[in-house]
Amino acid sequence: MPLLLGYTADLILGDPRNWPHPIRGYGYLIHTGTRWINRGKGRFLKGALLTIFLCVGVYTLFYVLLQWLWQWPWSYYLVSAVIVFFALANKSLLREGQEVFNILETEGVEAGRRRLAWIVGRDTSQLSPDQIRVAVMESMSENLSDGVIAPLFFYAVLGVPGMMLYKMINTLDSMIGYRNEQYLYFGRFAARLDDVANYVPARITALLMILVARSARAWAFVKKYGPAHASPNAGYPEAALAGILDCRFGGPNTYHGKLVEKPYIGENPRSITHEEFKTVSCINHTVTLLMIVLVSAVYILLFAYPGKG
Image (cartoon, rainbow, N blue to C red; front, side, top):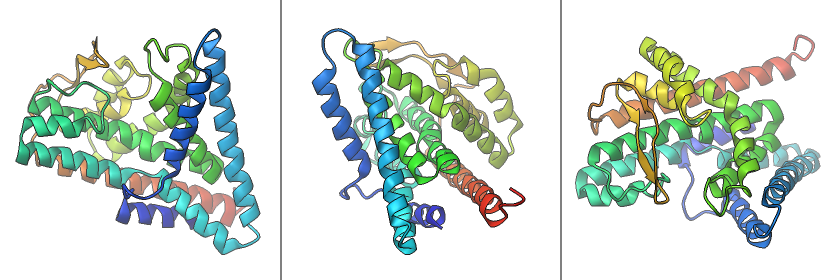
């Protein structure tokens, strides 16, 4: 029930930008801890301890909260559904990508570059319209894994507390998991933990995308290009989408003033059209629904028929 209610709420509402959100609280805790201890010697150990403390703390907090609420079942279901709603991000992900496409189409390349900077970490100031659209498509595929399938995977394995544990891991990586002077050692443990947490979900995402699109080319792309990506995980959903669209992702990009040579995914450097965002939106929604069905089936088998499970 919490899963279906939370999914439905995300499908209808997305994440309203002016609502309070637990991830903002995560960000405050990470920022505060980083400001206090990311200095001097032993930065790797300090970063690892901060990461472990926040992850254990978040899981424990939600576990204890839900155990306490279980004495009032409807409160338990309602709070759990709200947490699932906040943990899923597919509607917001697609809305942000669509806005970049729309602004690029109606207001031009400079406006498109500025709007793209809201959702990607690369330098957008010199990107062409084609590069902007490719960046959006890459973000859609990668964030389908990080923002939707991975939270659902952890829900299946560890319930609502596991879902929020994953969101903390992912937020830590997005805030301190950089290879720059400030975070190279301090954020290394968080970055590696995020790699481990996303290992299975990234591959599930790619497989579901292939199944939904029924694309043999996507399967070939995943086998060929998925392991070649600089990230141990991002290459799999990106390769799946590049195969579905028969286009080329990757290549060199600038991050925080540094040129990063990423391998290409695909061999067809064609232009992405404005209308193709509808295809990506359909794939994302269908993959999300399929994952919801699979997780629900697992819970039905385990709890409705515990003897057989």
